[in-house]
Length: 355
Image (cartoon, rainbow, N blue to C red; front, side, top):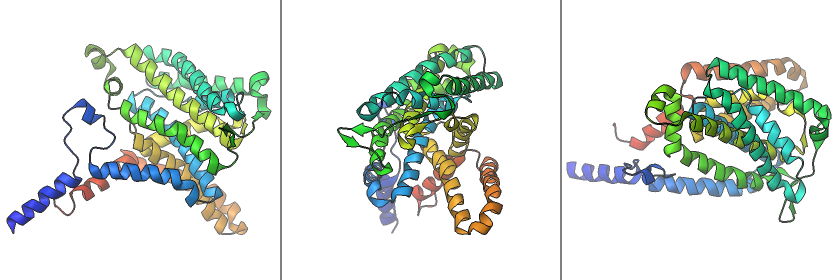
């Protein structure tokens, strides 16, 4: 009986337990077990088939969440990865959206990349103060950039259209007009999947380890040989690039760009995604975007289902409930949804074994 139990335990461990990583190549792998690779392939297949499984409005929400997760990943790399605070993330999204609005139709993919590139250049400039200041002082510097960008969006009418903003036709790819969320979904995947895989790989490479060293203690990182200037500027540029690409995709979804889409509250919303999801992980960006963007939609549906006589009374309580849920996570789960998922995963990884 003991021999049978031992064989079953060894077989279970070899099949489902996380493999020991002995080289950097293994450490950079996206999935380290056969079951993990199977789950990854199944998830990618589900993403490709999602427009066939959801209706128009759920597909619109899914596209919005995917774009939000892409932008949140950029902020995760900056805040959770390199430990640099930013309150100007919405401004970078706005830069990407306005840049993409000038290259529309068949040139829309190029416009999205252009928006990401311009946002990355501005991110480099915004990262310069991080070489001398940090903490709350850096937060004030990025907040000033957010206010400056909001002023430019409203007054530079030749480029931004002023307060009225700009309208744009739906994107086109290979002659196919992406005028519905179901069609735009594949353009979002075209940009999001490579950037998500790159973000995952980056955190496990030498650059990612430099990010974490700066986050933990920049003085110790300098002593260890980390180039602080290069690391901090790279973190700001990457974060801004992700935000710029997400802004261009958001412009394609909304088919319009106005300054009201990118206020300070949106920057705070993305910081909430970092906190709720769990800073410094790709999965945290996805889970944080799901929570922050999906829960308000669920609350809206719940309030609407109660009827018009209760909608006005409960509309104000909707934001209170949402804020209370975020505070609940801060108190009960400091590691965010990633920490919660990690405990559930570890339990099932060893189940039915008691250790």
